[in-house]
Image 1 (tube, one colour):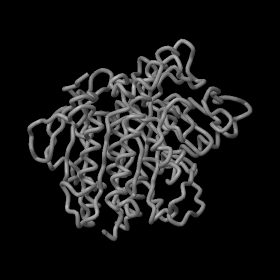
Image 2 (cartoon, helix red, strand yellow; image 1 turned 30 degrees about the horizontal axis):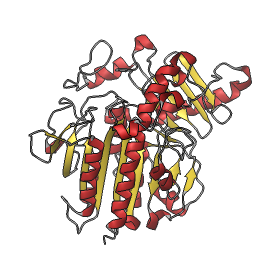
Image 3 (cartoon, one colour; image 1 turned 90 degrees about the horizontal axis):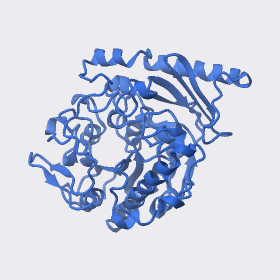
Amino acid sequence: MPTQPNVVFVFGDQWRAQATGYAGDPNVRTPHLDALAARSVNFTTAVSPSPVCTPARASLLTGQYPLTHGLFINDVHLDENVPSIAKCFAAAGYDTGYIGKWHVNANGRLAYIPREFRQGFDHWLVCECTHKYFGSLYYAGDDPTPRKWPGYDAFAQTDAACDYIRGAGRDAGRPFLLMLSWGPPHNPYQDAPREFLDLYDPAAIALRPNVPPEDAARARKDLAGYYAHCSALDTCVGRLLATLDDAGLADDTIFVFSSDHGDMLGSQGQQRKQRPWDESILVPLLMRAPRLLGRDGRAVDMPFTWCDLMPTLLGLAGIDIPDSVEGTDYSGWLIGRSELEVPAALVACHSPFGEFLRGKGGREYRGLRTRTHTYVRDLSGPWLLYDNAADPYQQANLVGSLGHAELQSRLDAMLTDMLRARGDEFLSGWTYIARRGYTVDATGTAPYGDWPG
């Protein structure tokens, strides 16, 4: 048994924090996640620092904010020389593996990714990006010949992850870091296995109160498929946990479940991600580590971002954290269960693109999420202010309200200080695109090619 903890980090794509049974969603069935939450640290204010795929994933891999690692839009390339989470674990003697969706390489979404661009991961069963969930493409190791996952790809990827946990494709005498990245519950929502689609009748879906009536029919249809994906992935979580138990590794493994960002799904009349509302920015985050963190579950509402994951996991494993990391190591606090005051988590859209276009309401913004409030500025000034404790569905924008002028001023000053500490000038996205030399179209979207639909 290794003396250092193993790490299994499992995440869905576009799984909003609200869409689990343990988070109180009245529709979705997630019994394995609900049981896991009862034995885990449940971060109830876990925030995606830039709620869209490539920026969030680069923050996970580097512990940096998007303006530092440079991936503030999708389909651009992560510097292969940056200290990454896998490189740090590998240097400490860990075997490293990655399975599933990658999305921090810029050579086409279905293109082969050579070893030098894999950020220190050795065991490799990966596709850059696909949301074709049946028979999807991937590459294994250094073989540039594309392969296809049989059936629903998340099931097949979970099979491969279970094999890795049992020892296939790794040195069984070394601790390991495994990341498993599923494509669902990202749209297309109806491309879930039939037995899970049959669990959800769109007409019976209870909508969040912030879904406008004119969006209700679409929201119910989309949510039925979305929840089907969630329930399918919940069974995968159950299989992974059972495999760790059967292998005798559960006590000495840090098991993390999360997502890169959320999905609006009709709330606020909005779709998809990049938006600053809770359905987009809040993600599920469960961390179970019996020997390190105990066996009893606990919920913590401290703001925590994906930038904090790399340093915290390194800290839990007793591995030095590179100076390049901007996130915070909360391992000592987690182990000691002490009180910790974290005022807020930063969230941003540095340059709108893709499904958040300027002509349709997309905009640059900077914001913060505290335990109880959301405050957001766009380039014109204050945009959104919500008291999330009193208004959990964010239906009353308090910007400019006389009764909340002091609160708005205080949060605005806090945001200014946090941006200054990050060196964030809050400029137009076009400025950052020009500084990086990215090739984009008229909407600010990078070309990606090979899109499978």
